[in-house]
Image (cartoon, rainbow, N blue to C red; front, side):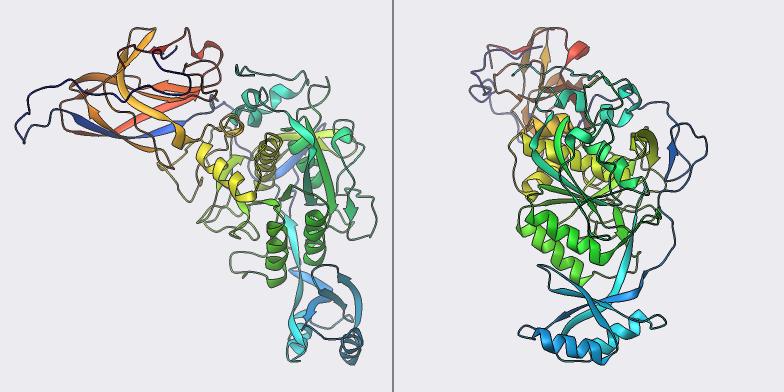
Length: 547
């Protein structure tokens, strides 16, 4: 369908109701319509069942194992983290440390944080408190342990030839096949994955893996003994359209694998290594950092050293994405709850919050996190569930945005908010944030605030407006004024290519039935618009010449 009579990129002259005698004051001639619009992705919820909980099923096995233990050590018992006041000399620091019978293991470059080794049997909390009593010490704390949270102008559907693409329901849910017609990513965009390492020679990953580092073993080899990091990397950038395996969100990207875990395979990441990795990412050109881990629980306060590392990366223009956590409770894990990090909750194939996904105030968006197929060590593939799997979906879309020219973490955040498919309560809510990430709308700049909404009618070819044009606010709430008396459809349209025509690639929709305006205020109107591709449109529509 096409709207005619408009100059390219405009709607022509504003609609002027016909001149009529002034009605009695108590009987308004023109009405008003208030409602809510949802930008859909074109995905139909599947019949896939939800998994029992966050975990992984490796190809060739039938039993699920957890990707992240729900309990474990809160901090390392072998060291603490300490920073000192400015102008404290190295000699003074050494003297103070040795006075306690401890030793400096290393200094985190750029952060000014000293990793202090303590003898066995010494309580890290008490050791940190002893240091804090010295006026030369700025801050001291245990070395907390994080754990992975397993979990052209014509736009067409672009489907890669990867044989297992049909099993990747998440890509369809986020409208990636439509987004790929605009961009499939770029090798000049770098996404850092702070995690358990990555199998860098995995045949479906190797071409998109750049240099990385293992901060635990102090080596450039980032061997993944857990599988979590390899899985995250595949979601973001498994090589697509290569006739093998799966498709990553980015067909082309540079993944920077940063290992912050030990070699036990237990999925534990130490805060000291996380801080080092975040500084390294910011200093070595990372555009996006994925953090599919959590530090502490609901009652854990903000961590000064981690706060400073986040601020450091943010001030260098890095977009940080983190998982909300897997306790199924109404609180966000840290660092997801940090105001400068994009927090992600998880949904299943039915687009309902996974019952194990955390949620709460300041959640930004939701993304697929259940039964997600991706790469796995030993050159295999696995399906896994968790907010760990939801976060890299968003990191991958953020990388696509950067490849299409968007810059700055707050610009990326706002585009994700204003292009999301609203779920749950109308507008923003604490379960889904602004809604399900919508890649097609995001990379095309189809912000919901750009949508034109009006009352009108059509004959299958031409659309005639019978109201003023309105635009929704953030969250999708709209108001249309000067609605003429009569029965009309409500239309919504985003002209993504600014050609004045409702054609492929645009967002378009109309209500399933007509509303009746009698000159008053009509509320509660629901409108859903979708990517205008394939069979969704049967012809070309135009705005009528009268408009």
